[in-house]
Length: 155
Image (cartoon, rainbow, N blue to C red; front, side):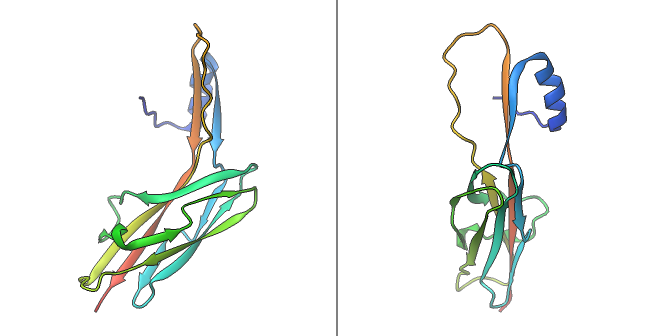
């Protein structure tokens, strides 16, 4: 398993010019708004929208993402819920995602954060049964966006 972190243009010109293969962008045109949800005081729910601005149908999944170094507060993923978890959007279609924070009764004052990842789901891969003496590289670039959910709790 190799992980390359380079610009897509570099991949297309360097790897694919010397090898046969293809590059596909999965979930291209993913748009999410707003870019963060903040719950303060009595606010315990919110909505963000996912829009498929791409040219083809796309399947998406939503799950928790690890917190980033610059995220503030303690991890709140144990009491943040969201729905739906999977959906399909055609070009130009949108889906509202509802997020609810169920704070524990004995929660200490402070800032708490969860990070929700909206990610395109790649289609099932094609199995190649024929042996070949040529190099072939297929790259699937999967788009995703993470949305921080910030909860400020004060008694």
